[in-house]
Length: 149
Picture 1 (tube, rainbow, N blue to C red):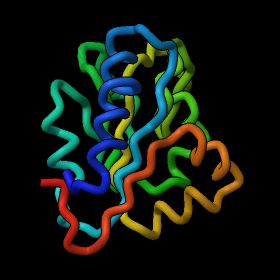
Picture 2: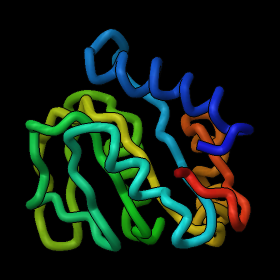
Picture 3: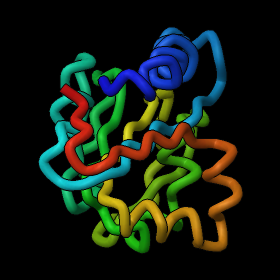
Picture 4: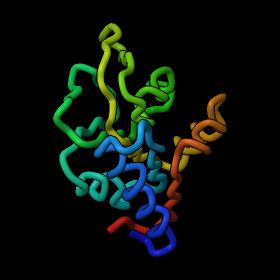
């Protein structure tokens, strides 16, 4: 973890990640790892424990209750924005859907890590819900050469 981001990430891991997994809090902020490709965002996220990872597409059919957290990697914001609040902040019982499935009620107590490149991060922050995600996300901007490992 780059030194300049260590404190913010450690705080997220302690509060939003572990306390939500242990159900000491009822929702968590999403961790947004934003930066160039090949900088270890997904590898670092995968190292934290039992998870489910969605790469490029979100598939509700692949949902698993036995994992601790969710990783979304390179999924276009336009694909998940309609369900983002139910998916990214682990609010408990929610109705989720995707392009190919009808709504399904799931217990989402799973913290979420979103791994995206700079342009997608800008798209989120400048969307109509950008202010919400500034408040309900922890944003880690990685510069070129600043790797997670």
